[in-house]
Image (cartoon, rainbow, N blue to C red; front, top):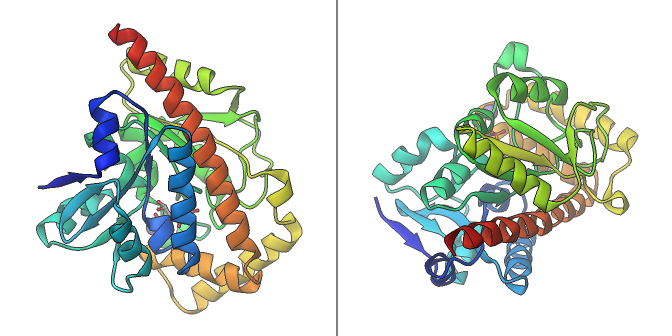
Length: 307
Ligand code: PSU
Ligand code: MN
């Protein structure tokens, strides 16, 4: 297995400077081209301008990339044949020399392997609405329970059953913190009605919980739920009826498995005339901004320990 680090990620690792992990499925299967490329570039330059190396993770021709040089970012965002792999398919992708975008579950697994504990995305996968029939529960949840790290997300995607997702996160032992809120955000909107989170006010508090978890021997991730900015929310009445429509359509077309999430996101984007894409980019960048602060804070702590 070959792990190829980008120049800047390698430099930052060697010099104990901060690195933030980013995923590639949000690019390859969550947004259309060229918006995905522009978003990827903006995400990376946000990191760089704050002194953080962006480590966008993907598999290309069976090699694991931790940080993508520009040519690879172009390939990931443009390719029509790139697969989507969760954690259980990492070995398959390497052995079969696939090119594949990584989801939350595979990204945090590879980030952990590369020694990068902080990761920011849009929204994690979770328990799907039709779970009783489909049994569709994202591998993101079990990976979060079994991989130490800090994951920043705007709750879970609104296409999911958020109540069951939050319950399952508790059952399997994922530490759940709300950034300046006790309410689980609903991706496109700030509120879900689920008010069971422990609120935290600062990146310092998040890092304190992470360090305490590690010292207590816990091996799970902390999920930091960071609500979308008020100004970029889609009114909940509007988005709810479009999501219902999307779910009915997916059911009618018998969409299942890993096709489900990309199908629903694309359908919602069309029905909102691109408004959902604007919201998705905004919430993901908002999470990356918080991820930057968290990885810098954790980096300061680790460097102090080294002195
Ligand atoms: N966040 C977004 N857009 C996305 C995703 C996250 O804003 O497309 C991706 C992540 O890679 C997440 C995946 O892991 O959706 C969930 O897919 P599934 O439901 O098939 O597990
Ligand atoms: Mn699934």
